[in-house]
Image (cartoon, rainbow, N blue to C red; front, side, top):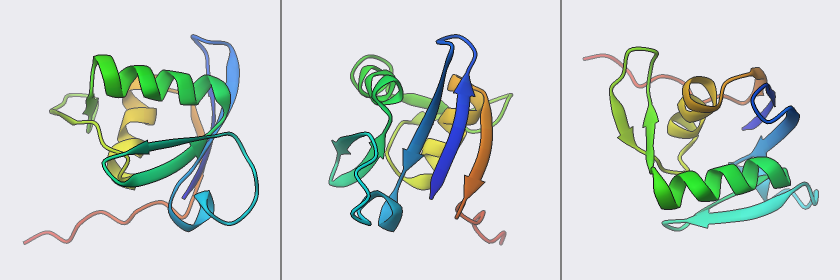
Length: 101
């Protein structure tokens, strides 16, 4: 998954790459590893993600909650970017929602 966005609070754009997009040999950003999962992010977003994993490791799954543990799994990261960071502009290769039932 590749996510590009703009964080109004920090005043900077960001890129986050996960899965095969994080390991495709294109050196974009800094590597963040957590619980065996590796992602790459631009420096400002990498710092924000490291701080969140250390100090407040939760993410909103929707505007009204609930908060869940912050992980580097695509669905949780995408929710964290949309609801906690804000400003998601585009997503390529987004995770599909789990089947209902």
